[in-house]
Amino acid sequence: MKSIIVTGASSGIGRVTAEYFLGQGWRVGLIARRAHLLAQIDHENVIALPCDVTDEAAVDAAFAQFGHLDAYSGASGHSFRQHPATDSGVSGHL
Image (spheres, rainbow, N blue to C red):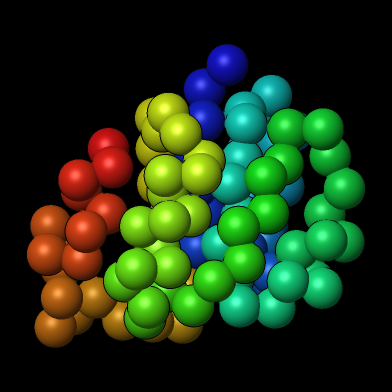
């Protein structure tokens, strides 16, 4: 089974993205600050990983808890313009 982590998964584009990949049979890690909204996405292939993407240690812990990763979708409100994905720590998990 393929796996993806989606940031900003509690609402908007992030939530739609997570639901799309769930519908395609993927294992999906949900990252967002609002844990109560992540809990509303009830599916056997979901792992809720509530954290703030600006907290590097929390993000590292979330990726470590999730395990194997095939893809990443960054849909959080946090901008990587000043910190591209290669500098944000995400690339180390792919």
